[in-house]
Amino acid sequence: MIEPIMYFGIGFLVSALLGLLFVPLVHNRAVRLTMRRLEAATPLSIAEIRADKDQLRAEFAMSTRRLEMSVEQMKAKTTTQLAELAKKSDAINQLKKELGEKTASVFALESRDKALRDQLRDSEQEFELKATSLHDAERTLAEGVTKIDKVYGRMTDISVTDRSLIWNTDLVETLELDNLISQAVVTMHCAENRKESRGAHMHEDYPKRDDKNWMKHTVAWFDGWGGNGGAVRIDYRPVHDFTLTDDVEYIKPKARVY
Image (cartoon, rainbow, N blue to C red; front, side):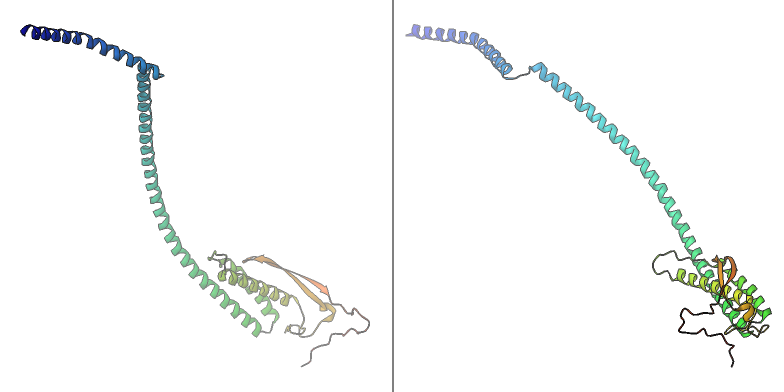
C-alpha cells in the first residue's frame, strides 16, 4: 500500500515541476503573440505613439506659453488703457469745470445783450418821438440822419446767444430789430434828401410842393447788415403822367388843402 502512494506523490511532484518549467514559456509566447496582434491591429508602433505624445505635449506647452504671453500683453495693454482713461477722466472733469464757467459767462452776456437791446429800442423810440415832434425841419432832419446812423452803428453790440434752430425767438427779434433800424435809416435819409413838402412828407424849410424838381419817385438802396456798413444810395424813378387806356384820362396831382 505504501509504494503506490509514494509513486503517486513522486509523479505528482514531477508533473508539478514540469508544469512550473513550461508555464513561463507559454506565458512569454502568449505575450509575444498578443503584442504581435496589437501591432498588427494598430497602424502605429508604440515608439511612434510615444513620439506623437511627446510632440503633442511640446505643442501644448508652446500653445500654453503663447497664451501666457498674450495674457501678459493684454494685462500690460489694459494697464496702459486704464492709465489713459484716468487721464481722459481728469480732462473731462476739467472741461466740465470750464463749461460751467463759460455757461456763467454766457448768462452774463445774455443779460448784457438784453440790456443793450432794451436800451437800443428805448433810444430808437425816443429818437422817433423827437424827430416826429420837430416836424421834419431841415436842421432836425440833418441831426436825425446823424443820430439814426449812430443808432444803427450800435447794432454791432447786439449778439445772438441762443444757437438753437427751433423757434429761436432771440434770433427772430434780433433780425426784426435790424430790419426796423435799416428801414428807419433809409426813411430818414430819403426824408432829409427831399427838399419839398408833399402829402405826408412835411418840411418846414420847404412848405410848398415842388413839381418841377421833385415830381419823381425816390428809390433807395441800403448797404449794411448788423451795424456794419449803413450807406444809403438814393436814385429816382419818373412819375407816369399817362394811363394805359384811352377810356380814362390822366388825373393831375393837386395840392392838399385842409
